[in-house]
Image 1 (cartoon, rainbow, N blue to C red):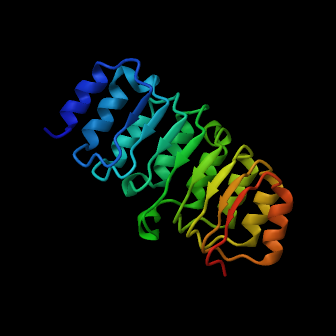
Image 2 (cartoon, rainbow, N blue to C red; image 1 turned 135 degrees about the vertical axis):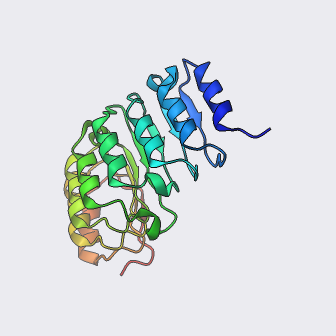
Length: 219
């Protein structure tokens, strides 16, 4: 039998100590599943939640869930176009999630991230949820610019891994901010960004822990 909204609701209702939940590629799970998690006893015990490619969820379901899951340390919303919005980032910021370390917002393409902007990223960066982050994936966040990246660099100084693949509105100014504020960066993906050798040199001087740097197809 398929995993359905009803079966997920039963699962979370009888799992008050649940700490890790993955609904990755669970295509039969919709808004009701997310609301069941939000309303269930495990909402406040969850530390790891993976909704990767959960394509039939809704923004309303995610908003309900992040409003209750205050102890999350890892949240994966990759390939969930409905969740890649400023409204969801604002909800994560307001929740708050002071223990959040990993937030994965990878889009399948630039078209899937058009509701994600500098404004939402700035709100997240300034919140306790943003300041605790060590890993952030913004792959194909096509509306991210140097302004948004400066906000991230200024407030999210614990970042050790950052994926900016396809964020082609980001240039030297944003990368300079990373070099000035994010000394703990160890892994950085800058594929398809508009960068110069001077900007990259400043980056590596300011990030002595950098062990992996991807600059494929940079212009």
